[in-house]
Length: 252
Image (cartoon, rainbow, N blue to C red; front, top):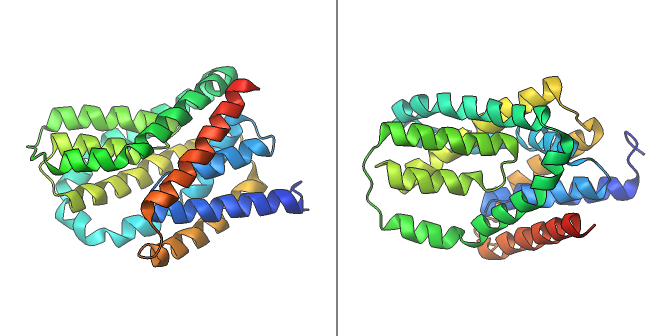
């Protein structure tokens, strides 16, 4: 037993976090694996959200580093949108901590449904954005990035798809550069939220440690398996688990 967790619970968290690391590296949506796993252990929704954000955040650093060349070419936009990303991440995490836990618990199933829908239609969104040749709209993208970042700090699953959609419409950046910015801002949003949760939120430390190691291993494996595993299959596994968790929360 580690930190009050039995071997079966440790195995569940390890499997979920390794899977999340792989899914995030290949398709996105890893939170739909780890969040339900924490709920299955009896962790409250707010504690599960804070623990999940803190545990998965370090693994995102490698993704941002991998896009350093593209980010160098988008330095001005990266700096410009870093401010609304950080402010939104702080605002979203503050809402989680300030509002009654019953409010977050009531919202979680619908947030999971929303994230599942985003993942399900991810391919259609990308196809539509590929046909859009946008121009830069500085004020609109600033406001859009702030709103998305509030959602990211509050819950976060699927926020990468929202960022890609906003950038595809409101920026003239290439798809590769937009994806690089998305990875950077995801790291930043989750980073400031993780700091807020670290300072003021309830964290299940044993679970966070196990998940951080598992997600790191999964991210490394995902980077090597990306060419072998079909992204659609991985995405639908995450969607299926997310829908199951949301329905259980609504029906209990």
